[in-house]
Figure (cartoon, one colour):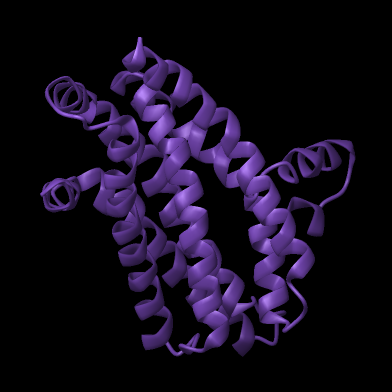
Length: 245
């Protein structure tokens, strides 16, 4: 029931449709055009699979951090009501909404995939399937952070800070060091390595080039767990401990 209600609510949200489906789809279409145009002119071509994963991440970041945080903030009263009259815990609340997120992120990725296949830029092969799985786990990670933001901040604050927050999260997976240099770039690279988003691009490159992903995947898993612990602990002490008391 919760899943059905949430999906209906989301697809009626114009902000969701624009920022997480239309915008990444347009970006991907423009990049496909640019890649085709560069090939015709003999210019260095873009890697079609990297373009695909970045387009997916644009949609997933928008859905998992901003849109999801806003929905959770709006749903806090529903959770408080359910919690007061039933045994509906914060973890039940999180799991129910994460299931919704999995479906939504899959739809976003599927639309990007259809654009890529119909434009004959990518094929549905083992590489693409691995990239989709990687995107799915990244979406789970970002959705847990979005859940934390939604539970701890008011809707107005989330709306006001949505654009700068999106930029910050986006910067965590942009490989600046591959094209730029300098002290600031080195500092940004160190910060990026703390979070799993940095290793998404490394894993993607290794999948595309058919190289071993063991080291990058290990760092992805380690940073995935370590950086989520503070958010889960705050949720525990702020909500679970309060319920027990």
